[in-house]
Length: 50
Image 1: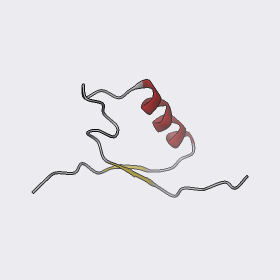
Image 2: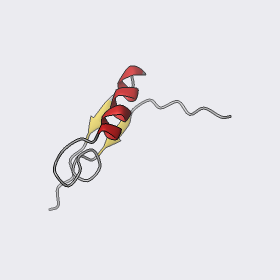
Image 3: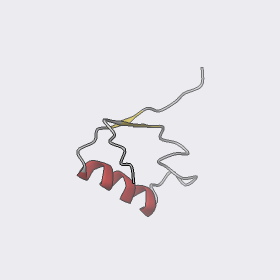
Image 4: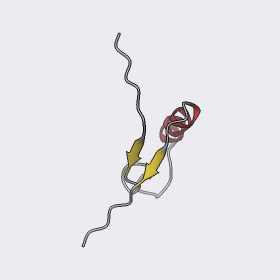
């Protein structure tokens, strides 16, 4: 099995990290925790429409 090594993770906030109630789900929180445990930087990139 091939392993992928990430140097960084970039993520949108609304609709990606946050659900429709503007909350982080347990599944998403677990994924963020796994990223942090591997010392991978997580960059939040809120997208706004112009």
